[in-house]
Image 1: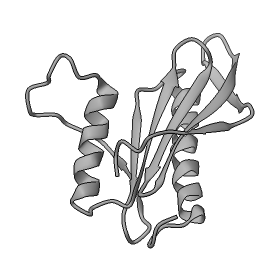
Image 2 (image 1 turned 180 degrees about the horizontal axis):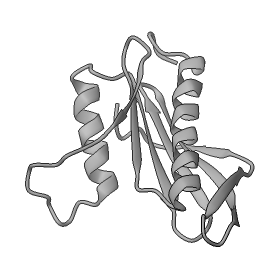
Image 3 (image 1 turned 45 degrees about the vertical axis):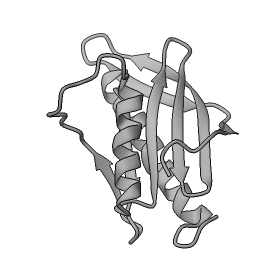
Length: 139
């Protein structure tokens, strides 16, 4: 691990990102990519992005989010980041956790229990979490 960030901090960032994704899934049944960053003081922030620059049609959402985080990491604004994506129809979330000298894509399978006809209620149950070490595209 690097100076200034430890496994406990990465665990907090992962948990915050995963809990937010579960909450969105239970509320809406789906979510768009969620972006979180950890500052040097340990604070975790959810990032909302408003793009004002022209969008290159060849770059997908994940590439644009990664480029934005790479810039913030290069400036020293952040020490870690997490992007949570919903995998298509396969009932899986992916948490892309990045810090200097740390890069994992963590797969989180889930199931949704739906109840109610008029007022839809959803409950998400998580499966076994697994992670793969990947090249670091942010730090």
